[in-house]
Length: 252
Image (tube, rainbow, N blue to C red; front, side):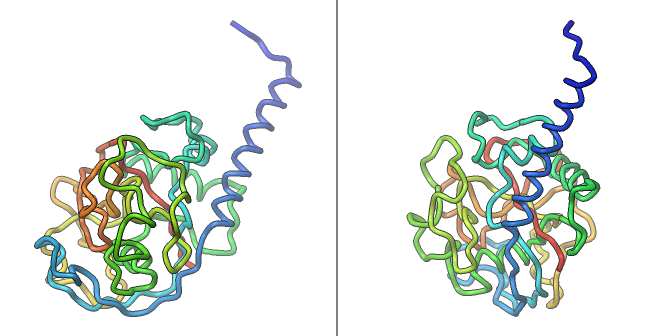
């Protein structure tokens, strides 16, 4: 067993706190303000699945969302571990994290004395916020920023994740909302939710059968069709997969 002097222990603790501060600072600097508005949510191209129907109008209030998916470096700084299967790539998205794991990350982030309090608490985006942001503020875009996947997302034939921000951003300056990894959102999954969704700031059903949670955006290992902005997918809240990560949101 190795014993450290008091000064060395303090130095190690200070180094950890510095890493945490840098991670939080990076998250703060890369939160993008999305101005609210109304848009047509769902299968606007007519090539989707039943749970993407009916197309319906949704109105969203202003919110912040991460420019990038949360990275392995940022996760490690807050949580002290890196669960990612494709680790060794600090700037790749963290993956292999469940919805429950992500809530733990967000709670630790919000409870850190280093987190600034001049805006609302960190959280996951709602499904409606996520799609509005992916569509560059509600535009009719098949993928996040384009009607073709090649320039904006890693999808269809990639067996690993890629560093965030390597493809082109969408119209709001957001990267990798199509492909790379699926992204957890806050909502429970209900295949029929769109039939009864409220118009203003929908936050999903109050509960979900077997704790199913929504993921959005597709991944590199899924077919290109799964990276459409309208595509809905679900996993159980405790599911961990090497192609599922997340990005943060925040209320102004």
